[in-house]
Structure formats: structure tokens, C-alpha cells
Image 1 (cartoon, rainbow, N blue to C red):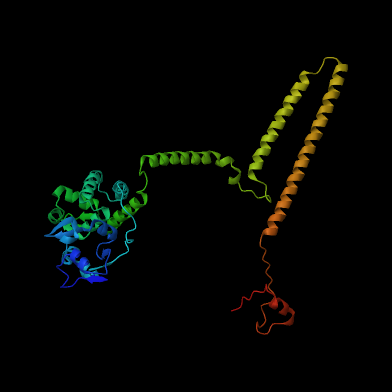
Image 2 (tube, rainbow, N blue to C red; image 1 turned 180 degrees about the horizontal axis):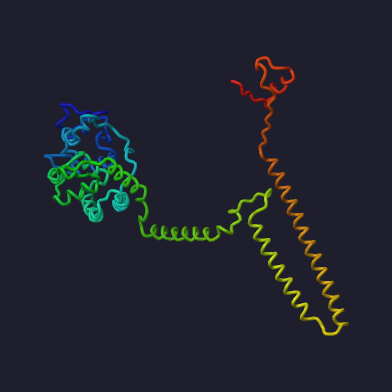
Length: 366
């Protein structure tokens, strides 16, 4: 069922039109964007212009299609006005108590490039108070203000029933600019996009901090996340998975390890020699016996060290070769053979017919 704006429906209230219609259970009014659930829940329209003044939250019994038509002006002429049935899933998100705070937070961040100075801090309180006084939500409040692309302070003040000072602040906070040569505030499309973008961000974050227990969970999750990030930053230089491991080439971090081991070996050797000199006896017989003992220990130590190093190098080399072969065996290998390029593809020589019939043959001719 669909009820369109026409002379015979224009002045009748929306409530009576719906009551006389048997095909509309939940109504959708075409010119109110994303307001289906709000209208059906409150049995009201978010706003309507009567006697050049915006009225908020007006019951359906007090609103006619002509009122809505006049409210939207050129948009109603361009898009048309009608009422039809809806399944109540037209609105993507519902506002919560935190939506306004998030909206103002993200809007203030966007306004850094607007160059409106201290006004954005004072304007937050004015805009927040104005939105909550309308009692229809942020989307519907913005939709009402953006009905006109330009305002004078007098018109805006009368239309929204607020004083001149707050009117100037609201217009600048919501993306209207006034040139010095006149007193008309004109909408800046880029700034209005920033306003809508801030509102979308607010809806995406509105479910955070909904209750005390949720707040605590959020705090603990944030602390845990920060500690995890800090641990990753500290462990980054020493983490194995942060190092390129290619067995075919010598790893860079091995060089540092070898240098450290070499320094330890040289220092240990020097200390051993100094200790050996201090333990030498004064008599020749004792010196020969002790010299023979230390010679045996040194020879045994060197031979053991060489054996261990050799064994490690052999194992490491074997690992490199095995890993390299395994890696190469799993890589796709493309073999390209240029069999000939001086013959007619439709009449190839016999010596390459077997290549052409094979599954691996690739024809690069047009």
C-alpha cells in the first residue's frame, strides 16, 4: 500500500490516512531518512516546519502531508512525498546515551582543520545542549538544520527558537561559513561531510562503556593489550621469528655469535697461560713434570675443541644441504625451451610435433 501526496491527501493528518488504509501496518515517510523505527515507536514525526518555526516530536495526529511537503521544500518537489509500508529494518543503528559524547569528540578532532579557534570548545556545550533539547536524536536534528543550505542569523534564530549568539555558534559548528561581505551563512560541503563522518564514527563506538562492568573489562583489556605490545617491542630484536632464516646463506646474527665465542676463547687462553706461568716451580725436575702435564692438557683441549667445532660444522652443513634440497624440491620450476620461431604454426616441422602435442606446450603466437 502506498499513499502519495495529492490534493485530496494534502491536508488530512497522517494518522487518519493510516487509519483509513488497510495495507499499512508500519509506515515509512519517504522524506525522513533512516527514521522508520523512530516514527513508528513514537507515533510522531521528528520535526516539521509550521509557521516558519521547526517543531520537534510532533504527533501524527497533528501533522499533514502538506506540512511535511512545505518542511522539505525543494527536496519534496524533486523526490516526491509518499507513505508506504515498512518492515522496520530501515534504520541501521540506534542512538544511546554515549552517542552524543562520541559525536562531539570526533567532530572536535575534525574541526582542527576548520580554523575556528576557541569556538569549537565552547560550541561543544552549545551543540550538546541543543541536540538533547530537541529529544529526537542527532540524525534527525542534523537533518532539520540541513534543510536549508544558507541562513541568516535572524532566520535561523527564529526557525529553531534560539538566541543570536547560539545561532552563530551552531551554524559554525555544523559547517556553515559567513563571508565578510554579507551576513548569510552558507553550507560548506566538505565540512558537512566531516560532520556526517563524525556521526558515523560515533555510532560505531557507542556501545563502549555501556555499564560499570563493561568499563572494567575495557580497562583490563586495554592494560593487557598495552603490556603485550610492550613485550613484543622488547623481544623484537631477539625473537627468532623476526630473523630471516635462509640456510643457503650465512645468517647475519651468526657472525656476532662467532665473534663473541672467539673473544671468550682468546681471553680464556691468555688467562690459562698466565696461570700456567705462576704455577711453574723453581727447580728443573718439577718444571719438567708440570710442563709435561700442562702440555698434555693443552694438546688434549685443542684436539677436543677442533673435534667439536668440526662436528658442529659438519652437522650444520648437512642441515643446510638437506634443508636447501627440501626447499628446492617444493618450489615450482619452470623450464622454458625456445623450440623454434621460424616456422608456420599451422604447419610445424616433424621434429617438434611431440612438443606441441605435450601438455606443457605454450603457444605464444597470436
